[in-house]
Length: 165
Ligand SMILES: [Zn+2]
Image (cartoon, rainbow, N blue to C red; front, side, top):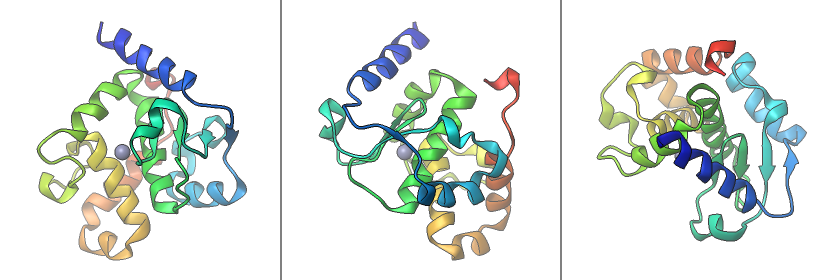
């Protein structure tokens, strides 16, 4: 049931994806490749640059499966954030959608500092994405939280195995 609902949401996202969809640009690849290295297959990521349909109701970018809806945003930090969600989807499957929604409305939400952990898997899905985003945009984060930074990068750079796909 859980996966059924999540799968439906994923398909609704695809249907709402609108007309313009493309692969990553060279500039976007140059942002993501150094962060994820071998941990993410950049070739499978689809980008919808503009706002579309129901998904356009919120101004935030949103990621459904391997499709990133940028909604007009172009900042490297936000791209990294959404790519973390693709990475999560690749490891959690459709369950990712519900876990991410739960994370958005959880007490700590995007606030990775509030989690008080040195472990990347100790963060909820939004806090994980926000931490890697902040690591990319604010170099001091890596200096102030070296253990969490090291664990985060080791995690997102680990290639997915057949059992995690
Ligand atoms: Zn997010």
